[in-house]
Length: 184
Image 1 (cartoon, helix red, strand yellow):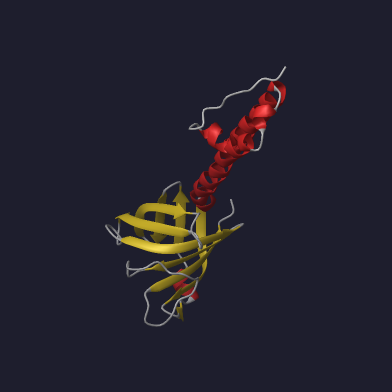
Image 2 (cartoon, rainbow, N blue to C red):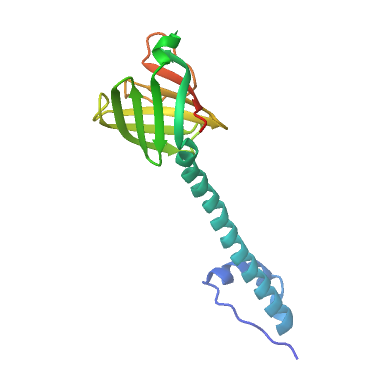
């Protein structure tokens, strides 16, 4: 006894199976057709689940972007517009990041605001928005990389463009800082 399973041609599965139907699927037994249908449905489900897993990894990476920055950071190298900062200028500077908030203390002066990382960008993008202190109301665009306990950030203090590489040059307002995480 031969059975035919009809699949509506306008459905997703019908469109997917149309070439197989044209090749003689109609003459297959009901069991074979049912198995093929279940196999294709499983393949579609696996594809959907895999897509969700990949999307979840991207979201996780983006979420980790800020989490990787959490901590207290001390500058070990600084450069502005192609000129290195003297060691004395770095002393007393502390950067603390917690979630989407940052606090920079330079001596007695405090600058606070928000920090947002786009880990999907290459290099990872960082947006700083000053809320309290000398950068209040300013948006500073930058790029960032973290490797273990080393953080490198290149900012554009002009607020116009995001740097594309970790370097500064004369005539720009690019500021490159390498920080090391303060150990407890």
